[in-house]
Length: 78
Picture: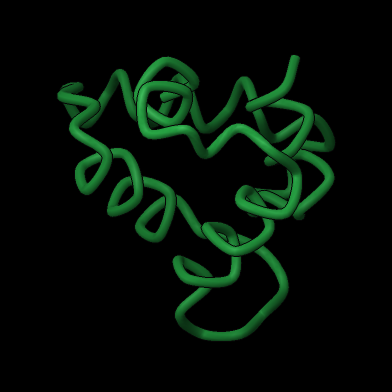
C-alpha cells in the first residue's frame, strides 16, 4: 500500500489524513478491516483476503480489531 500511495504522491501526512477520513465511512475515527480492505483495493493493492487481514493485523498494534489514525499513519510511514 505504501508504494501505491507513494506512486500517487500521497505520502504526506495531510494526504494520509484525508485518505483515512475518506475510508472511515462510519465516522468511528478508526478503520475496520472492511474499510481498510476497500482502501487497499481502491489503491490497486491486489491481495487475497487472508493477506489483507495479515497486513491489517500488522498495522493494528494494540490488537483491538480497529486501526486508529495513529496506527494507520505508523503503518504507512513506518
